[in-house]
Length: 152
Image (cartoon, rainbow, N blue to C red; front, side, top):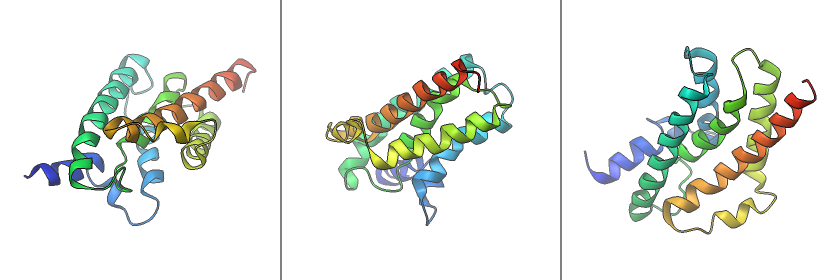
C-alpha cells in the first residue's frame, strides 16, 4: 500500500468518505452509530480515548494527505468523526432526541462555519482540517449540556 492510498483509506474512514453524496454527513453519522450499536460506547472512558485517537490520527494523516491531495479534500471525514464524537461525551444511547439534536447542530456548525469556525481552517496542514470540526463539536457539546441542564 502506498502512502497516498493509505491516506485515502484512513482519511475516508475506511471508505465512508468516498460515498458519492454528502460524505461529511456520512462521516458524522459514524460516532452516532457507534453510540447506538457498540456496547459500552456511551461511557466517557471509551469515548474520550476514541476521540483522542481519531483527533491525533486525523492531524497526522491530514498532514500527509495535503502532500498528495488538495487542502481538506471532500472525502476526508476523520474531522467529522472527531467533531461529532465530542458531544457524545454527554449522551447515552437512549437519548434519542438529544442524539438527533446533536447531529443536526453539529452539521449546522460544520457547514456554516459560524462563530469564527471558518478562521480555524486557515491553520496549516492537518490542524486546519481537524480543528474547525472540533470547534463545531465543542459548540454542539455546549448546546447539549445546556439542553440537559434544563431537563431535555
